[in-house]
Image 1 (tube, helix red, strand yellow):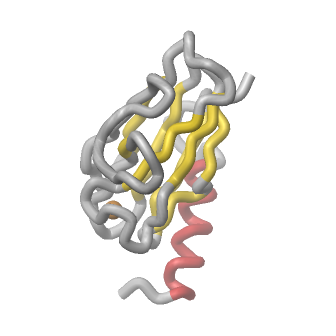
Image 2: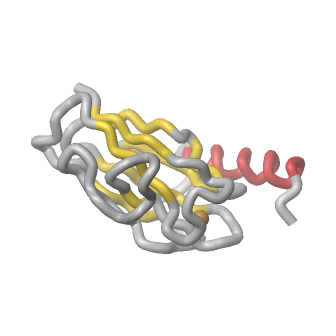
Length: 127
Ligand SMILES: [Cu+2]
């Protein structure tokens, strides 16, 4: 159901979608959820910037901030929190506060599946 070849092919479709073949916002940072993985897993986001999360998988997922990479519960890290909620087949977004301090690091995970297969994502605020 989640074979590697099938996944590779659909990742290419996702990449084409992300390249702008549709009414998708062009500003901000994008992360794709596919084959139970975040791509990329490490986001570099400026203060005030919006992160767009697209779930092209067959299951609902979320991108939810956690206080610590080893403590996967909803919460804030370095004063920053976000939660796309569980969603499927669409794009959700959140915006990093304009006063976020560069160097801040926020782990994120999927509330549906915890770290199972997803691994833990990482968002770093950059200047
Ligand atoms: Cu998930």
